[in-house]
Length: 299
Image 1 (cartoon, rainbow, N blue to C red):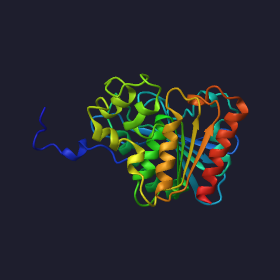
Image 2: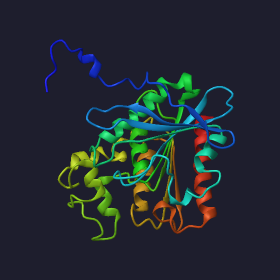
Image 3: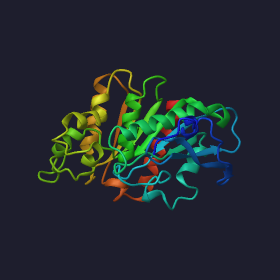
């Protein structure tokens, strides 16, 4: 219905997330505090987007930030879930990152049932901008931000790291992430993947079959955005991944090295998607290698 001429239309404007009151901080284990459900964006026509922020209880000055991007094939997933191999950890993986000296931000983003690419990327850019805007009151050093994502979240983290502009992201960790949607069929066993299928998770992300929307598939591929000056990358990928072939990780690392960027590829022997198929100590090594890389990036 139309608004009366006398009604102040500004009252219907969405709230500014940079000015909203912050949720209360709550204890989340020894030395860790949790700010859960802070609204960082209010996209028109969609649900408000929230993030959780894990903070050290006693920090000496502003702390660097890891932004964790969850997986789930761009179709599902929980913002505070690093994957099934980590759900039993005590203390949990996010508490471990905080105890190593980081703040840890876990944002929601709109899924492919809500918006197609590049909507997810815009959401994550808004989350990073919100952290920067509110860094003083939260005790964050937003100039030292590292991205870390798994599966679809690794794809989005890589896209964000390569398109963030200034100020740059300090580093990016990806686990078993797709990196070149235009060549997924090449990297799968013959007949295992049909790029003309409009029902694949990648097609749902971009809004149509990869063969029908080649320009959009290319734009949604991190390898297409590699350029000189890219931040350092650590790419971990299981050699037996039946969901996202290990060759996808190699494609990103090769593209980064070709422009002089620092990129480390760590093939995980016998590892399947979500780190299925490897023993517990190897899962621990994947986590520790990623944390060590993040520390080096912000040192």
